[in-house]
Image 1 (cartoon, rainbow, N blue to C red):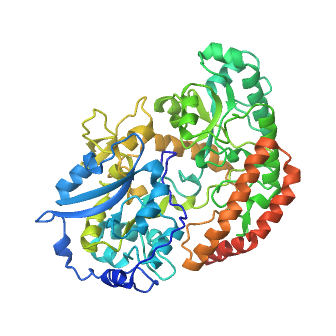
Image 2: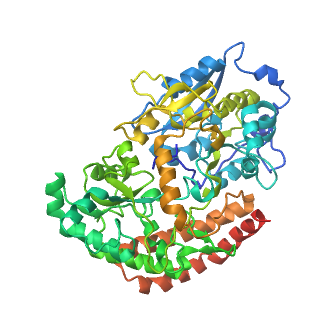
Length: 575
């Protein structure tokens, strides 16, 4: 689900499997890709696995669930309906979402207990190729063509997604999650860690004559922004009294090096203007199609120096380097923030959707000018939302054709939106959707108003995640665009797209096994070094002295080779 901070992503797990030749032979061995395989089964007549089945069948799956929500997938309305519709029962094994990263590697290492498919795997490329080579998962391209008409149709409508799913040998090792909302520089994923500013505080301090230095409604330069934060700090008592705030005023809060809660979007205007929008790889693409490391740029250094200046002036939350999501949200819901960062401020602050649409209480902070004015779109965002490793079929699958036939139901245009966001007709009195009609009089899922409810909490209570596809062409035909997506799309188009001056982002590419492994190994040390420099630089300063040390570390960790690998795939992509 794309509107939550708690997006489950794959990690490069270190895993060692020992499997006997007997087990591998019994599971069908590998084909082509040095492991994995189709496990037989593609000779099954599609009519035999056409749904609904005449006789009930049982398959086994592994998935995760958000903390504080229903732990048994079969108790969720979506899966209850799917069982009735397909006559397929799923025996689920589940892991709580915040424990997934620790436990999934153990599950994948034990073939005796591993279910037949992993529904919301979120595996990265390293994981997919590793498990393929070890024979733990099977390639599914033939199953897609023969038993998955819904997904096959998605690939026909948007062929770039099939290409993005294929490895260097043309194999597909996982079923994708696709969510189109906007395109290229207007894509909803083009900016994740959106900065939000407390408009109520701004308006109040303006009325008190405390922000007369502003040249427009909101700060437009880094200097104006700093002065606004100082005004928040110096007028804390007045703000507490005016807005009945219980707790100290925090001019700006964030979680450094934590995805959408990271403040790096603020430093896009320094130096060359690249900022640090890819916090997993710290790379960007220049206008002449050259892959660079942003931590080599003068703008990155100057931006960290400026953020330290803010921290030293008590303008940044002292817990910004250690706080958990729950703490970050709790303080935000108490009304203590002047500025914060998130995918959607409704996840952090006490504000409802209609107020955000109307521009009340909280508003996005536009790009800040320093040496330049720029917003670098996130890498991979031009093809909108995409997760290559969302669902895998394991080598334990007794009837892969049936499992793929069942999983293909997730790609039905009426099913995918429900899996992604939630459903209708829930027993708890609140629905994400109501079933309505489109302009042609056909059934269409219509988003119900969220009111004061958090989009994250409501969706996590109803949705099931997993493999799915929502194309732009579905809106208005099968489903309405969710309101919180629409206002975010409007913000991006109106506020940020005009300042997205860079031409390219690094695309979604599927490297070879060798290159994926090498890039992952190199990135482990490179990312750690950059994140440590960033955190200590913001907190402790002395950035200039630490800069040369960082550059030496990066070179010793193989940064040149790391960039060379990415350059190879960027060049291939643009051929």
